[in-house]
Image 1 (cartoon, one colour):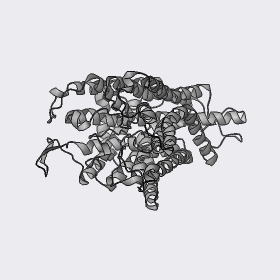
Image 2 (tube, one colour; image 1 turned 120 degrees about the vertical axis):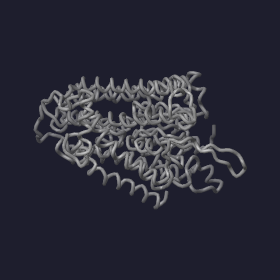
Image 3 (spheres, one colour; image 1 turned 90 degrees about the vertical axis):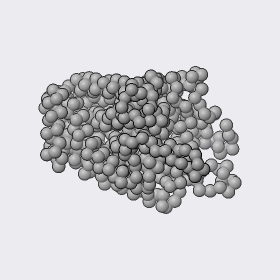
Image 4 (tube, one colour; image 1 turned 60 degrees about the vertical axis):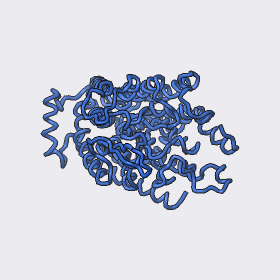
Length: 567
């Protein structure tokens, strides 16, 4: 580890924290229906969209109606994207004449982008035509991110309202999140990326002649427009197979920093939105502080592991850390930081190959996802995921002192705790259940590139990434098979919708409750004690659930490496 490396990490953290408050202020005004700088331009368009869709923006929805609207919208998105892929060979804007995507891969990809996972079992530049990239994948990048923000807003209203029947209007939240937040920022972002050298064209791929006289096809396309929203919306699916390790997606250190900041920007800002809407910004800062503690700890371990490298190489006099699978232009520090950022949020974009990380360096991305990706997390998903742990932490604190737990004036009772646990347990059900089947069935084992604990880690990582709606991969697993396309697709659906529906049920239950005034026995939730309790609950729940599987994978691989054993 170097001083320069840590300075770069601290600069990134400072930028994210500095953006949280102004972006949080803007988003609060957007979702409260207040006037913003963009209102004169976008408000008429917003009204027009409501008129076309027959939506009354002032009509509140019960949590169940909100959930049904969300599920139907996502089902329609899945069907549209599936059909686009299957008909690709007959569609326009396909200059390289890409054929139809196979049914199992189309199913997996449609589920992946609808659930904000963006797991890719295919090479983007060799599989998807421009129309599918733009009208299919990029559109879902926007609306899946807006869906996550909408769910977070519904839960925030549950905490901020009293004796209310509704939790908002899904169609209004979806429209405002897309129109006022994601689209304007992505437009400016994409233009800057083009300025930095990222391609944005509908022309065919470029044919070049190499110095040896050979022919080389250089893939180009509408890259910048997809790249901007894939980062901002914590989607992660790359236009190119190499993702943000590709020089066309990530040309230099400036774009690398911008991509990492954009992954965290909205998720961090939503904690400030939460604080503003419940009437106490300190509550939002406390949640962001808990996220920050977990994030810094993860960065420290990953950076240390990658900087230390393999002791077998050190014994040969080879120094400089573990550079396998990393871009020289980014080095160990920024590669480790990017890996932790992308798995702390449900992004999945990568600028280095996680399969080449040291065992403990690869453990941190795994653990980040297994904790529910609540360390800033995906846009919206990180906040509502962390609030599930807040409910659990408050319940535990109430048991300790023998009184009914309260949070922000709302009594946390049996229904809220049951729904929170139902959501939290859906993740290990998908991850461990499918992993257990894959490691004993021939269809699962046939795709492994490595034996021993690292091979187990590849399978565990695939289902963890799918169920946590992350989308990154160890890259040593050949996952574009019938078995993995179907099972990872199911894991992605479980990890998304088996969490969202209980979250909306909690929002409806809390919104209907009366506000209880604070008393001498009320547990303060804006200080260091609460932050410590919340961090402890997140780690204990994740540790107790996933430690045995981690012991079979990266932990035993690390011990074997120290003993000089290879597989």
